[in-house]
Length: 152
Image (cartoon, rainbow, N blue to C red; front, side):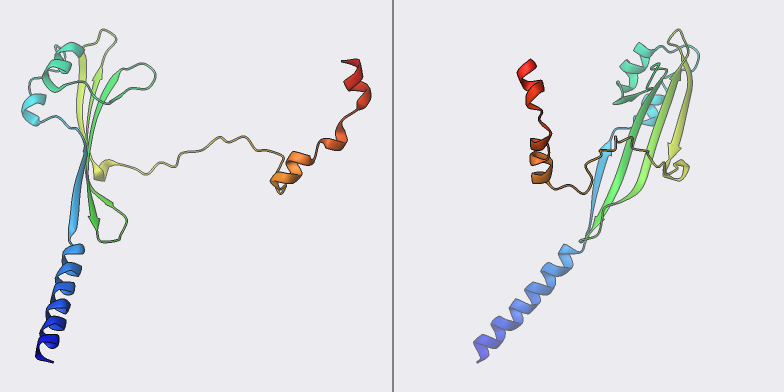
């Protein structure tokens, strides 16, 4: 019974150790934000888009319609156990350009500056609500007009 008791005791200790390790936080980084040393090379009023591309690289996000701004976004997420991942840090660098492609402004934003924006979805409503697949499939069988089929 002594060997069995030691085995059970070791198994319980191993199970507790594994469960504690499983509950440790896991951190993930997403995106890219240029370093401050690289951003110092960008001079407002004199640097061009090509200069910015050379100093800090091209961004993954640009201004939507005119391309007047470049946005560098980096986020850090914490995943703790079985919980949903939580964004704990966000850095956004926005570089705006004038019409000639000269740097107009360099701004930094953090998670505390962000706002939750509810996106509206434009979905076309269909008139087939409540109809089963078979009813949709077989619903037009009686609507065929033999006269129309013969005239075509």
